Image (tube, rainbow, N blue to C red; front, side, top):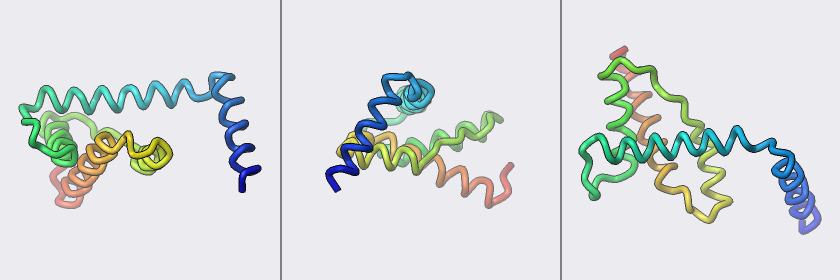
Length: 110
């Protein structure tokens, strides 16, 4: 087990040093900026949950005629897992956004 973890570590380090994760880092930065923008521009109070803010952002995108964003929920969940739950706010926001997006699409509000 330890050898597999060391091998995984070496693989990730090699690819990181080669710059192969730069696109992912930029995408993560965009996701967090979207999250922050939703938190500051949608009139939410600090008591609103991250999930609720995600739902509200999906409704706002729909109401303003914007295309829905494609947040990779599984990738964020994995990042949250390996980061010791440090990405839980972003994960909750994305879960709320994706749930509201699905609800809007399923109800045929497009």
